[in-house]
Length: 399
Image (cartoon, helix red, strand yellow):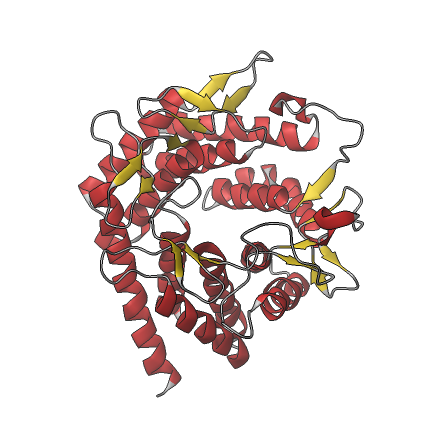
């Protein structure tokens, strides 16, 4: 079969999958009483827990707005109304005031919006910012954009100046580290806040974007043969399990963030590094040669990782791999990158989608059997699957 035909077939399949995934969440996740979204959703759409996770609320608002704003077939009143209702719920309940007067978001809320738990990290805030910025673009509400930018300032302060506002006690044996998630998240926010916004905003975040890229590149270790999840603040390898930890899916996600950034700024060297070290390398090291699929965690020295789920096949690393290889191919037209995409595509679409009830399973055993059969939980919401399908469809349209 010719590559063009294959690509056309692939695009149609991705498109159909995106439609069924969107339908599933429109049908089962909306809380019409209190606003916001249920994310703990069983295989058949039953809500099995009413807790609302702030980062997943933010992700769902962002995803709905992005679909509504950029794809004609999702430009529907029900999607816009759901996004607005989710945004309203977040604005009303997500922020909790701290003793220092800084803006902190709760990690999870009761169904009616009472804070249950706060995490000493920045991730709830990150997705609050993404939701507000995208919603402001969709509705034209300038207050939301301002709110997003104000919270961004708070985030930058926590990451680069003083993290004490996050509430984590300073312990003598706790060494400060550069965890790849932090610069990745900030780079993602820079791309979100600057997209199509004019030179002034682009310049405002220019230095931060460069800093994020440098911080991510510090995770290339051992003469460029490994991407490590955690390094020291000066970019050195850390001792113990923490220092040896690899997360192939996360490296692949960083890879496509860097490819996007390199395209934006015309940086060919960065593009090469992104593809060779953050896309090809984690795939080669992380692909299970026996059963197929990407391992969740690995230890760079081959010790058994201590995370119980290390050998499982999770939905989101495969989503990130699909985006990364297709984006890398679209930028370079190297056929071997398309071959890799095809391999990940075959595995992903033959294992994760649930033909019976719609949406995707998230957690498979190493052998590829469904281990947990729910469609949404505290970590799986309306984000990685639809973002992947959305981005792949757009790239395939261009190709």
